Structures are given as structure tokens and as C-alpha cells.
Length: 287
Image (cartoon, rainbow, N blue to C red; front, side, top):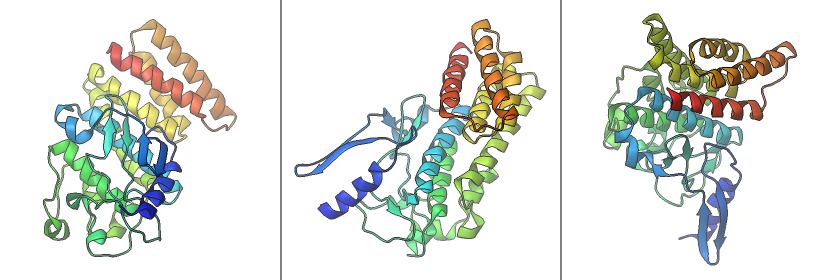
């Protein structure tokens, strides 16, 4: 192992501090080791047991949040696979940043990126960017929804067009970089629209027992993207449909906090998001 490459990857990983990224606690080159956060099993080990479409959306959103954090620091993961995403039954966290590098900077990898997830530009040795991670996010999304990866080898990656029922996945897997999402935020907007479409169908069919989980996820997506207006709307829905009086009161308090920030043009702080995560987790448990 090249110790300089190891040190470089550890320094990159150490810059990332986010709830959807496995934490690097410590590392050394003499003796050689690195200590990372324990986050449960990887998705490759458990995805066959993930039957719920709503849970898949939640996992993909979690992963996109981790990527968004890295991208704001101009860091690419470049090896986003089901084996490199950890899942503890509640939250997904991106781990194993051994192929990470800064945008517009070439460097050696600590391990080879997994071939079935390679973006076309990685195979063709062309410029990589945020769209490279978004390609791999699309492969992961495809894998979780179908139980298999869309490509078996590099030739298929370059030549076979994937057609998935979700257009969001097809856009991630466009061969041409410029036709993919150019930012995680753009991807999240379409993911929110997809989840909202599912949610509205449940509302229309009066299947709120199924729809509540989607509403919880939409609330968190809006809060994490500082979209207080739509968060307020989903809070109204949850207050109407949740039966548990204690949780209903928690939701009302949360609604007042959001209302205050909307009226005073104040960004939504992490404390409110954390509180919302606790409340929505309770809702799903009670449901």
C-alpha cells in the first residue's frame, strides 16, 4: 500500500462531517490503521430485505444528502456502491472514501472503483465531476428497485441504454454527462416530486395508512432543503391524519416553529430538523 495515497484519502475523508457519511475517527500510517464509525451492515448485505418503496426513497435521499455535503467541499466519492453504503435500519451513510478526490484534480486510488458502477467518463478517461457520482447514485437506485445492477461490464455501460419506469433513474444513467443531473439539488427536486406523486395517489385513494410514511419523508426533505412553505403544508397533513395525541401536539409545536421562521425569513436550523426526525420516526413506529 502506498502510504502517501492512504494519507491523502484519509485527509479527504476527515474533512467530511455529516449524518449521512460514516465518520472517520482516527488514522495512522505507523502503525497502519484507520478507525471509522460503526453504521450497521452495508446495503449489499441487506437490500433483499428492503421491500418498501418508501424505505428505498428514504435511503436514496440519505445518500444524496451525504453526496451533497461532499460536493459542497468539491469532493467526489467515485465508488458509490451498495457495498459502500451502510444502513442501520433507519439511516444510510456513505463509507469507504478510498477513491475520493477533489474535483478537477487527478490522484491515485487506494482501491479500484467497482467496475459495474463505473461512469462512462471513468472508463473513457474523460473529465469527471459531480455528474460522475450522480451516475453511480442512479446505479444504486436501479439496484435497490430491481434487485440487480443495470450493467454487467464496461461494454454494457458504454453501449446499452437503460430504461427504468422511474425517469429520475434514466436521467442519472444518461451516457452523456450534460444530460444527467448537474447537481444533487436538481436530483433531490425530482426525487421529491416522485415521492409527492406517490403520496398524492394515497391521499386520493384514501389510503393514508400507507401515505403517512411518504408524508414524513417529504416533510424532512423540505426541511433539509430549507423549504419551509411546503414543510408547513406537510405538517398540516400529518396533524390531520396522525391519531396519537402526544405526537399530534409535537407536530403542532413544530408547525409553530416553522411558521415563526417563515414570517421572519429565518432559515430552518439543524435543531428543528433533528426534532422533526425524532417525531417522524415515532410516527412510523406507531403506524
